[in-house]
Amino acid sequence: MDTAKERYQGFLEQMGEDSFLLPYKEACQRIQRKLEEINAAYSKQLGRTFISQITFRIKTPESCLNKMLKKKYHIEKEAAQERLNDISGVRVVCNFLDDIYKLVEILKEDEEVEIVKTKDYVKKPKASGYQSLHVIVLIPVQDVLKKKVEIQIRTQAMNFWAVVEHHFVYKKGNYGKNEFEKDLKECAKAIYKIDKKMLLLRERMESAQMTEQRTG
Ligand code: 0O2
Image: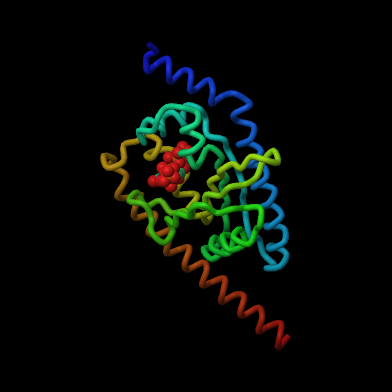
């Protein structure tokens, strides 16, 4: 009978095989290309940068295993495929709050993209203070397969917070025991206020620009 250690080792090996990973990589690349096209079109239409950063990553086999153990899923490749939403992860950083929602609307219109789940941690931040909008989509790859991709959409300020918190707290898995959590939560709240203020400021500046052009 195999031990848990052997089973985990077998799982890690399967998850690291090219035949497993390549469709997830292709899914990320397809979403990335799509987002680049959207960005080019909308930046032109809006006369400003719509998306300031698009990155992607494939979750490592170790990270998949840790998440599956945490969630008490069966440690099997099929369970990972079915239950993990973020083996393919794409991160999109916008300048303004309203652009997050504009992008979701654009994705909804895309015939190739099927939205299966939306998690709005902007309207309802996580207990940590984490803000981001997650859209889990299905995208066709290799003509027949469909793969899930988690698209995380957030502002630059939210991203700054998430990257710092991810490094020092989230990945350490010690939420609820950390002396920095109160300050991080305060920063998250301040960031939301700044994001709202920057949006209002942009709207005022756009309206002043329009008036100037009309009266010009
Ligand atoms: P990593 O290392 O970033 O990949 P579900 O989709 O409901 O089955 P899941 O995937 O736990 O469950 O959903 P959730 O909570 O939306 O988290 C998905 C990802 O969001 C996480 O992936 C993180 O990338 C990010 N995230 C969620 N909560 C926080 C948080 O409090 N702080 C930071 N910095 N990021 C967060 P992973 O796989 O947990 O981690």
